[in-house]
Image 1 (cartoon, rainbow, N blue to C red):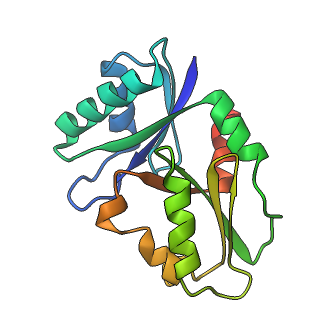
Image 2: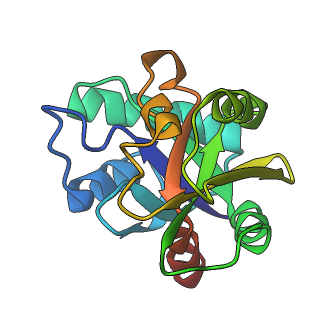
Length: 174
């Protein structure tokens, strides 16, 4: 079965991960057809193992190899297709659209945080098929009130986010 692993913390201070090295860690852990998407911690691979087992194996391998506490989320090709096909916002050159990958239920936590945050004009969030999507004006992602939530230590092992264009690139690799 084909999967994509979304790594969180690829740019953690001191880890300095190169995607070729990350791919090798995946291969050494028994994954097949391993390749990376961009330099932001998206690894496509094949395996006969179940998602829960893959998460445990790969987090342990990454943690040991790079000497940091690895968090990753493994999604099947079918799940990525649902993610891509469920995007609730129209593409617009003035906005970024992000999709959030994480543990079950994190979309509700993210929506609560979004509702509490001050929003820029046309900044929006929606949950579709238990997936959280966020539209934010370009240039204000990290400065937005909700954007600051993304770095909360209490949420670090619960989700990671990607620009939705990344999901399209992942699907092309399958």
